[in-house]
Image (tube, rainbow, N blue to C red):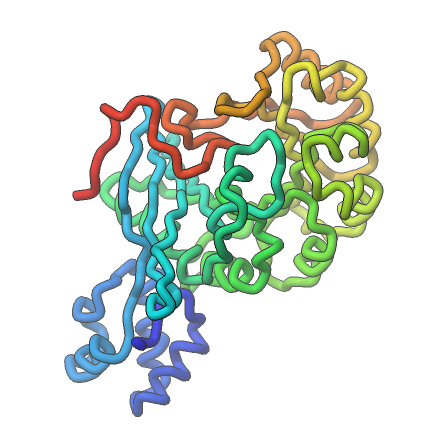
Length: 360
């Protein structure tokens, strides 16, 4: 099988070039072409000798995720349905589909990417959980989502790119490929993003959080809290039985924040379940003495038995947290009309099929 170039580090590509009888710096040139210049056709890598390009074309490949469909939101967001190459086609494996979301704003764009196909964590308010875990993604398949979204919108990119690892999957349960991706994203010679603009969201995998804390290169960390007590969290997030709130918050307390950094706690508001004033007071107590903020996310509609709270209840929750000294912000998700919002990614067809744009 051809050697897959996408997802490889600069060191790996230098070693590959040397193994093919070329100077090691040719590998660094491939790295720059892939991640900094977003040139994916080997024949178009004009910084390489023609003979080497021909050999690469015969012995290597760049397997970008393929855009199967684009779903366009009225707010400008795009949900990408992406088809991945088979890992073991000889074994009869079918192609895997995942999703990524591109959200343009003034001065920046945010790309939400998946780290697994499906998700094993089974949060009951999240539609992605209905898929179960299909498989882990490779580093090339993860970083490829960013590259595809940037390339597809090349003509209208803003100066700043944010990446959030908040799509399908639990990033800390696919640790090594996720960290390989993060290093590619944050390498100034690679994709070249700032650590301030890349965020990893976890449901609370404590060993993964402790491992992430030791990394020299790492993104910002967001923790999905979503409840104010163990009883409540057990009911909607089965992972809490393995890593209950006490263990999770202790991991947050020992997590080494950089001088500019705060932990983010994400709290999906479910009407009549976790949105009461006493919930807000308990949340404030849980996160007290942590350098953290709370993002309140009204639940996004889908075919699950929940509802979003009324605006006045959302505001009351935010006010209580703020008055108790906890920075709190209401985050309304983009792309709700195309099933691209938080908790909606489940490979579904848009409810407004007339807005679907097929790939060119």
